Image 1: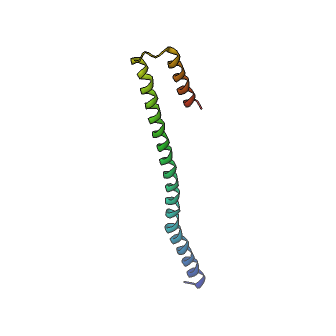
Image 2 (image 1 turned 90 degrees about the horizontal axis):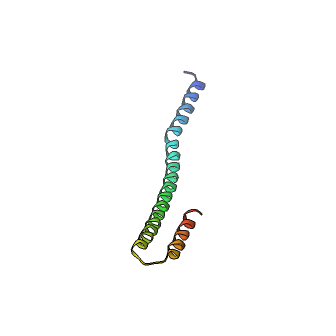
Image 3 (image 1 turned 120 degrees about the horizontal axis):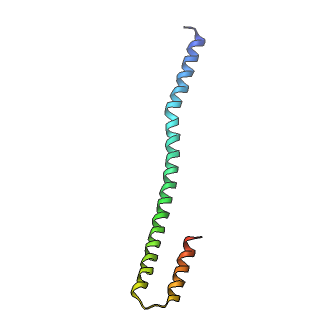
Length: 85
């Protein structure tokens, strides 16, 4: 085998080794960033669900109270504005 061909084979082997070892690490880091972003989105959704549950319980409590329809309307408008921002 000529020396030029040996060098070419070694360079090709080095490039393949770098490709096989480095790219998965880079992709894993990228997946980790995506995972953190998804975790944050789920945390926000969980927080919103908790607020919505509380608002639902507040609205349901009006069915058992003697509050005026004005109080009910004020609460509905507050909830409506929170979720339509």
